[in-house]
Amino acid sequence: MTDSDNGQKTIEIDIQKDLFGANEDAAALNTDLFKAHGITVIDIMGSVGTGKTQLIESLCERMREKYRILMLAGDLETTIDADRVASHGIDTIQINTGTACHLDARMIKVALMDVDLSKYQVIFVENVGNLICPAGYPLGAAKKIVVVSITEGPYMVRKHPLTIKHADMIIINKIDLVDALEFDIDALERNIREVDAKLPVIRVSSKTGVGIDDLIGALEF
Ligand code: MG
Ligand code: ZN
Image (cartoon, rainbow, N blue to C red; front, side):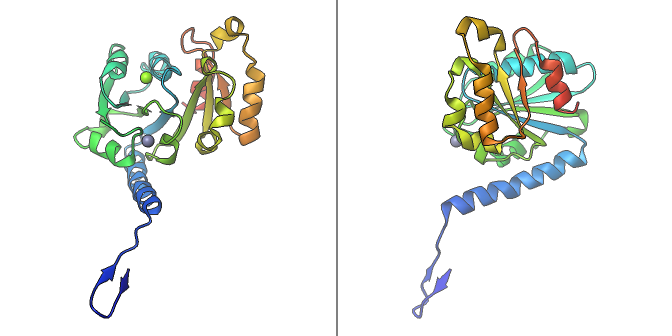
């Protein structure tokens, strides 16, 4: 802010800094809240159609005996994904973002406002289907995982290196289709390693269940 002699003030707003800074502050508060309740929160990102919802369904099927789980579903419209997960007996909250192409930390806070968090040990957040901006908006989750699917073709890791860089783990999904698509899954994994050599990469089929137990282990449940 600068003051001039005639009493006028000029405020320079760095939209990038203010927007992301405010989100990061809200995310830190969410992290404190989750820690205070002993809840592990996993933020699941990926394009539309990568199988995020089916992956959550698979995880819930295997984990629900041991953990009390809440699922937050982020979508522009509809309750399709929340309904699918709810059909497994899991509590869900739908967050309809209207026009926003990602969830942000404040939306999570608002969604959980009236929730008795002492009821839950695990929260799966399905972010809005979009491989670009969700990575720039931390929600306060313990882990951010990115789901890529071999049906997206061979180039999406190379085209979205920033999203890979922000992730704590990459899931390569739909490996049951490797033969049918003649997909070079090792090449895809090499692309991930070129962005971050140490990033855990787990190959799964959320449809057949292959790799899901490895994923649960990698998430340290
Ligand atoms: Mg979905
Ligand atoms: Zn967005």
